[in-house]
Amino acid sequence: MASSGVERLWTESVQQHMTSAYLSCQLGLRRSLQGATSWLSSFPPFKKYLDHVSNDQRTMGWHIGDSTQAANGLGIMELSRRKQELVIAANDVDKELVVSSLLAFLEAITLRHSDVKCDWSARRRNLKANFGTSDLRAIVDGALVDPRNNDVKALIEAKRERSQGFGKDIRVTWQQSAEVVTAIRTQNLAPGTPVLLISQEADELFLLVGTFGEEYLDYISGRTTKLASKDFLGLKRFGPWEISNAEHLKTFAGISLAIAIQGSK
Image (cartoon, rainbow, N blue to C red; front, side, top):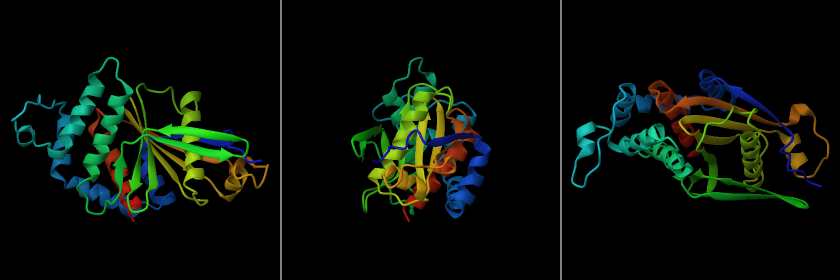
């Protein structure tokens, strides 16, 4: 009988400064990450956006007929920054605002890059994987999708509140592990294929990387009932990056763009 394998996992929270090294060496994103960072550094709206964040400037109120983009120089980044300001200022932020803030940011930094062929989809996805006599369901708030074959390259998740910490907050850990497991089954991923989940919890951004081998795939497919601890599903979560911190946003933007470039190949 197949097992969902959600209980067979090890988790690790990794400091944000180690993210680039891990993605470059372990996931083969070195060239995409270098290209993304270089492109963003020469993209005028993103440079202006970072200046706004650094100086704690506010976007202007919108009125029909106003040329606000010309006035503040944010261009395609204006909507993203406005959404982030609303999240930061809210006393009781709702999940829909957090989702729209994250998607606006991801779309703004990738839309004009010629190598990005994937789309950030806001459609909530009900992932369902069968494990013999039982099903495992997980709902994600969006995804990075390749329109050429409808393959999901990364998952998107949003929370209205900060969690206590990955591995400490059982609810968040269980939910995100379930999302990774269902993605493995529904996408028929091959062993060694990383599962990426980009998330925003209130005003903090994270990247979760799920890794698994052939032994784990055999376990959740019902081909074996035994699994050594070294073969558990691995979950590494990087972050947090705060949406009020320009350096954090610069790093996170480079990572997110690199993921979109790599997923478009």
